Image 1: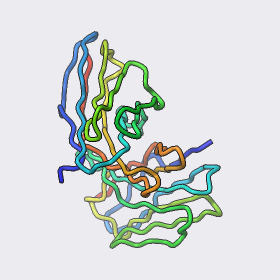
Image 2 (image 1 turned 180 degrees about the vertical axis):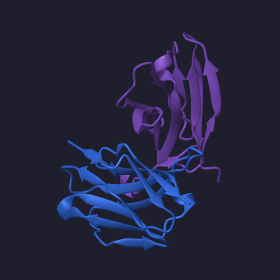
Image 3 (image 1 turned 135 degrees about the horizontal axis):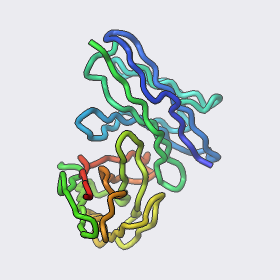
Image 4 (image 1 turned 90 degrees about the vertical axis):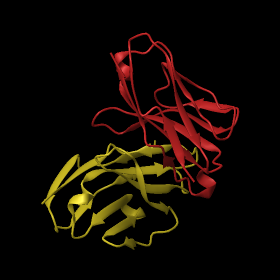
Length: 113
Length: 114
């Protein structure tokens, strides 16, 4: 069965600290996509990144980086030098053959000034 | 491009009333989805559509109906509203897995059933 687990329900860090959000997934498919979405306090869902199952290269975008490891079925998200504007709920998600995205329950991130 | 638009932004319903949540996308996406997000929770799929005239149930379809007569529009109908349907409703669309499967979301409709 397919499943996305975000074990960290809530994290608080002080501004400028680095923080890693964990995501572990389960799937039987060999072709799938993984995503991270951000939901700021305003409520909208913002797409951050997509990674396909054949591309295990890590990705960096500014202060954001993603580490995809098929061996451990993980797709972790790191924010470097966190800022208050990073405070949000972050969702990891899995899309496989049936085109229905499975979302994790989200990690609520508080960046304290 | 407006992307995915949803109306209304907020609505209060009385128990037993009905309403339609509107969703329109201008990205020519074949795939469209309706989710609900209860307070402090993740997203649950209500219904989805892989193209005009084709719809299918998601995880929590009871109490809802959908139709897809055009590529652009995917309205969600609530019949006989119940307090358990108090939630935020998100519509999303995508080109499908063959094109990467990224779903783009509307701003949401906040529904309160009293």
